[in-house]
Length: 306
Image (cartoon, rainbow, N blue to C red; front, top):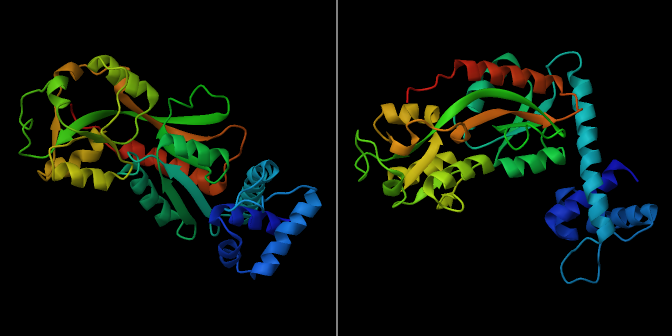
């Protein structure tokens, strides 16, 4: 068993067929098939159900796939960290962030990072906190920036808190609810609500305020620019961190809404961002440098007045 065989198994699972997977790894189809067969022989088990109409891994195949991804991620991390040992003049960093931090905080941090370390290749994935946790678990990302509440008491993670942020509802100018007067939740809930997937604690807090069993947006959208465009062209109400809307509010493109029930927002409705990594896993030099850039960007980002 070697890393090339494991890479081929991962490619097979990701591309769903021998021909497409062989093309992806630049092998002929017979050579690719022999690689999978050799891995099966070395492990003493069948990894692929060849009798199924569509490609399907066996139970052992799924187990080997999970370990293969971890081993490949570990090999990449080893090579990357050794390359960075004598300075950040080479290497790469893959990390994730939630849709709200991707609006301003992470881009501001990346701008400062690439000025200092222009030779480090960056790849950051924007997704909801549940998917980011899955990517962190299989070591496809080194850390992520998001709401820390699901992770802060879990010993499997190490967490570095950032500043708490205030969330708000917003609409387009000219919306029936637009204006200086506060609105009620009942008035707000007459319109579709758009926003990213909320952490469980925030959903519970909003459900208590609205008297519902649960609180879920009419449309969950992890792509913030799409969310803004929808709100600007419809009567939908958006949900976002207040600081992320400042430029659009100043330009007159959006208007934050003041809710009577949220005059004194409970702690559960504030956004608790932070940096989440695997416990017991040393960060690469590039990740440590990005941590510092994120902390610095967080300190520079003001919180608008309520």
